[in-house]
Length: 351
Image (cartoon, helix red, strand yellow):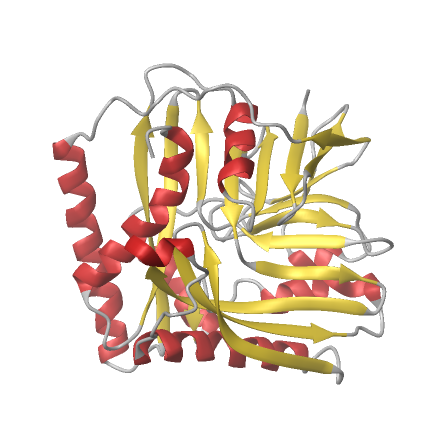
């Protein structure tokens, strides 16, 4: 099988398997090239010739029943203390560098991401990890993608980039993060009290999306923000519903939206350039987007958050967080640790 993707939409009881039976996925260097296209999209944070937008042709589409699969083997290798300290030191360097741009007033917001490497004693079949993610996270979009160019990626993400059909479309502004603990794990985070920093961060994203939509439609509506749960975290979310006069130009809208300030920053062009030149670990397909693109029927595209790149029994886990002027390094580190738990839980049945 040259390329495939299997995905499960939030709260659904089945998955959809997309296969391309020959050749390799089409490659594009701009979202605008997706205008009028159909297939499963795998887009990186930074598009390059070596890391293009990929479109898996849906030669075969199959509905897959979801039943809990066999046991995954527990994550038993333990943490390499030397490598952990090295990653922590790198994060401190990056934080100081990124935060200085906020203090100086160069940026209003910027997102700092990092990568954590994990290992299991034996190789776990990726489809088994996909099934486990579906069982653990019913509220989230779950996708497993494998292509020769991108490698194998698993994501469990709460963030819609573009979803809809005909004249009914939606996107969301998702930002702000808190971890649920103790008795609050029994609820949906409705008792959460949000800090000024989190509220400001979410408002920045919502304002950006409003400005993007104004370029394509005069008919849109915003609701929120409200608290929503994703795994053991809660976020602030605003929902945007809108109509489009022409669905043949979804690529143009994607070009305007991606990357949103939820994964990049403001101003967009300047923060994007700073991130790609200064983060210690390239993001690759983390904080890009993926999902089914079909302007004639239904489109379901999600930002690739809470994801990992699978290489045999080695797993590269990615997470990030939005920084503002009053951000504190240790708190931001702990936020990324909380986000990494989403993927670590899939590897460890003891959780």
